[in-house]
Length: 618
Ligand code: COA
Image (cartoon, rainbow, N blue to C red; front, top):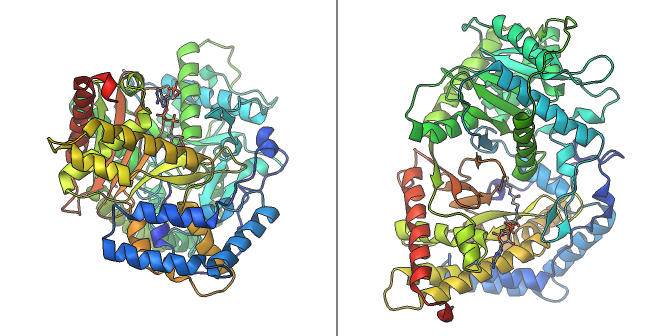
């Protein structure tokens, strides 16, 4: 869900010090068979760029941009030169975009990963909290890991085409490392002796839990449970310094604090143990009680930031790629650091774990005594204490600022749009356009993530849901005298057509970014099209959206990407849709619950419209 490019300044690129995308021999069976990401034709991108601008900038601005684009595309001009540069890059690299994207969208991005980058996932609430549940969950993840280790993960498909599975190899045993100017990501599966432990955190205290026996077999659920009990019982004190909260800070501040923290040998070893661990399990303290209908929203907040320093924000290591969260009050979910992967691999891991947990029962195994899990020690100097206090304050400001609404739309799911021969995703996106238009009486730049995993090391591009056709539809919807259904049909088809372009590597956003970065790499003056107001406007995504489908009845959630925007994530199931809408309280003009309600109304109104219209009219 990374789309922070409006924040990207001009700078020179140095080589990326990330182990995570070094594709060694264990990176995948099917990986080398994938096609390489193409560079779309220059003229095509310029045409679609103008089309994308049409509903969101005024005609004068559009005219100005048209002229700049004509100049840019002239034979022998700047555009052609940069395009050739990109084409050269495709010959030298596995993927002309992925390193640039990792760096630009994630590792150079300096806002805290909390709320601003890391997505959370809300899982159904546990009936009663139990460490047995946690033990089963851990065993389920280890079961999934065995498929990664043996390279037996079934290859996924989109639109009938196999997908690159590389991201699955990046989510376990990896961690983001802060820097004072830019971060890195390290993947410890690629080291000589890959880790065999996870970390567990309870009451802000971290433990190393070895999850493999010396013969390489994973611990049984029973064994994990006993180890968790030992951890639980030796971390009952609640007065510990929340060292993990440091990871929630602005990246430059955390980078500085990190260098200070790891000056001490014990601290360095403890930090390294967390970074190297396969994943982290956060056993959270109970949050304030809420009514059942508020559960999902509160759980969304808990997954995204932990509730603030008084609650569970210190019970995390936010740099860790994968952290499962199990609350003493039954709350369940996870948070993941976004640099190594998108939501779909994370959610398919969850689907596997949930299935595993249904099947597996605790079987009493003969007990070989296991060592007490090692508690990680930290020496807190006055400077570190100061950094913790600063991180607490910033975390609490962020926690106050996040406005969240997680809801279930229970009237229909994918089934209804399918019955109308419409793409469910396009249908939902058009409802979202309508909801936004009804509130603001204007359309806004809208981002929807499109997978580029049909290509080697592919990540995402942008589906621009606000189109000339969506604009016509939303304006017509509340006007009694128009052919609404025909306009809806056209808008849905246009959205689906652009989706097909995007997943085939022909969308405009990453291409434009590539042309810009190529100019920077060439040390050439930045072309005017990138200094144009339209370019800033088109990247100001008031609606940042993503579909993350899952078999499990869960929903992913993430924060807005602009101060006056919304983050909207959804999991369309057959007969209902789970939505998570976020906004910032500091913005007077946005309100997550209001948009969620408008979205529900829009979905229902579109359904009524279609049901009232004879099929022949379509
Ligand atoms: N009539 C009937 N059925 C239709 C239809 C139509 N006109 N159009 C589509 N459908 C069906 C599809 O066959 C599919 O069926 P299934 O449920 O049996 O699989 C279903 O409806 C869903 O299709 P659609 O709603 O069009 O979406 P999609 O599954 O193709 O997904 C994207 C679209 C953009 C979400 C997907 O291409 C993508 O890129 N996903 C990755 C997103 C991502 O990375 N997010 C991560 C952010 S962290």
